[in-house]
Length: 122
Image (cartoon, rainbow, N blue to C red; front, side):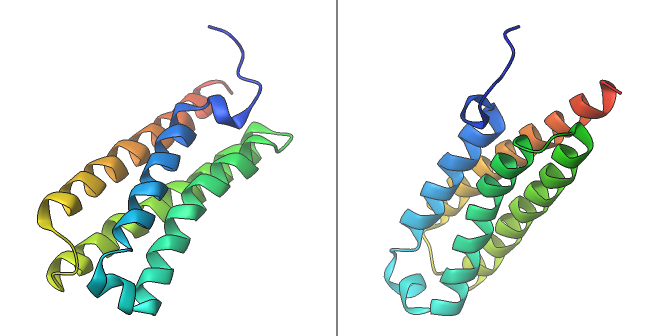
């Protein structure tokens, strides 16, 4: 396996990027677009997933990287949690919610896998 030298090469970051775009596009829906607080919170959480992977990757130790990955997976859980509120408020189409939820679960799973990998390398 080739050594990864850029955060853009990480599968978890690639999937986080997809999740973030999905969230931003979903926020264009009329009901959600009008709820500035909720829209802002889910957008910030999704961007946090991406940002923390990138920031952690550039740290000088795998311990620091793991810490940022943990923040990232927590932000991903926040997005997943907020999707239940969007579902309950009927702010988004159910099929779209399911697609975003699946992407969030996939992203979080990859982040957790990266954490486990880094722990196993000790």
